[in-house]
Image (cartoon, rainbow, N blue to C red; front, side):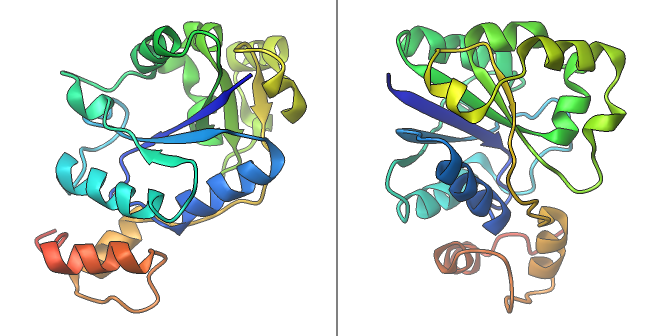
Length: 212
């Protein structure tokens, strides 16, 4: 069975926290292809500082360095907020026989019941939950706890079925702040940034994040 992973975010900009997390996940689970999905209009956070075109270009620069990673512009082509349920519904139709994994952070899991059609997500894909600094499974609401208990699985279960599981990934926490990165870039400070060299070059060439 083909296993496809989907990793969404604003990627404003894409940084080492993103790439390190995906690399760590790939060491735990055999994923044939990772789709990195820049969000067009994220419904749960402030709007991106860089345009969709620039964010996709930076994601593509990173993906070119990793076999099996692709910059996926599907959400950028849609109108309105980037709802995960809609994205996964389309991908389930596109890849009906594949196992689909959708990556979220522990912070997102704790507020999952505020998402659009959130209970439909495991009918379309497995959820892979990344640990995040400052967020603990012990603070789950009763609603989320019941949901996780009903769907919780292990890493090797993700390749045996097409959807239905929630895996709490046992990987290190990568504490990288995109907000801090943008502040440093606004001051034209490029040293010691947790960004790939090609992304830094692109930001310099396009003069991004100067007017924050």
